[in-house]
Length: 540
Image 1: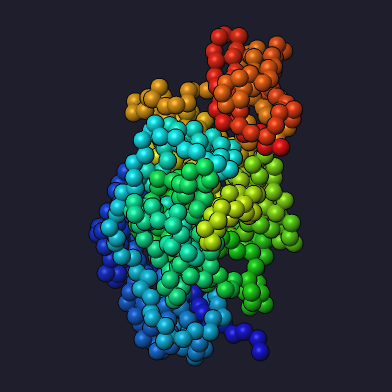
Image 2: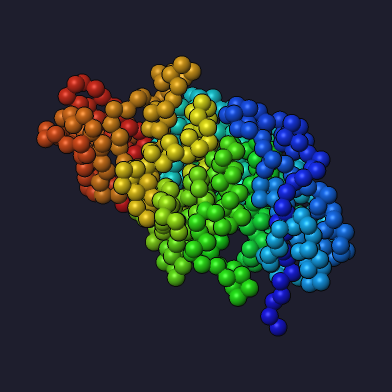
């Protein structure tokens, strides 16, 4: 017997006679969220008002079997369970309902505890302050951080302190019981969790979120250091790990709105939608990946407009028939992240661009091939997927925004794109390329509030990439100076030298003769200027 539609998205026509007001945002936004809106002059509009509760009550009063899964104030919709087709017809005829569309085939019992998915405020703890002079021992995780010069952001004192990252995922199996994650709870860095599913326990059912969050939040010496180890985190399950249906995009939108309501600075979403289980009921084609069709994509764009850096995995369809990015990676003003390995090589499974309407996608690329992660079994392993590339960038984006507090979310995301090594010539595999976040910081920091001399790393006249490298790396030499290049071991002993006398804006430095490991690269130019790049990884 074929599946029957039982879940629906109800579109309302308006928010007339709402008990909420744009003049009283404290009723639906936290103090932190309101402070961010004020800081960046982001207005509270009618779109921010919750769905009219009178409309919702009128619908639930129609039938005892109706269950409210989620609400989206930005799209003025709700997602419901309603197995009675006669009742669905009655809903369609309500004067304040503009449309009803099928979005799921769940077989559901209201005997489960009704979840309260309305926003509630939580006490905001502060993450620990790490002294600027502290240093991390990254172990194997150095590659996924150093490729973006993220270790230099960390060394400069930007590890995510005071930033809040909302993680939208499928579940965090064992996350709260793994001993090496206990400091996150003890330090107050886990601000809360929400389950958009009726299960109401994000720590059971699936481990994807455990892997993803470990890439950002870990602080395990000599093994796995996260990209934002001092940030705060809020965990929101929006993905049903047991099926793939359009209703999960409604959960995604609701999760993004929760993130906005608590004042999150960054969203990481290692989720994407290309096809659904009941494809005959819910057909989907690439034309819907235009940034405007999907409710999740619309919500992602609106989150960015409301002051959130949104990082989304591009998808793992590069070698499959679908091939392209999915939703909400197609959203506007977000960072869709494709996958590479630590040697800057494109991962064949990483979904390709552009979006259906021709925008550059993915936006950027990060390490999602042999990424170092923590498993739910308390083991540090290497994993593959753009799901892992996105949190690398989400954590480092939080650190960069911490370093550039005068910029808003949309500006920071654009700065990240512009720091990509392919900014001037984007392609469909890596988009604008591999961002250099420390260089982005140097290009945009506010000298009135920050002194570069306080940092461990100096201002660079040259750029070195990729890091890690495999057979060679490149030095950007825009002034076309004659330079001497010394490759040293970590004790400073010179292992290899190269002198350039022919003016060249891009200098290739071969390293295939050197063994795998960490090196210092010292550059001295004809004007006597000297720079040293620490922890350059050669990974054959």
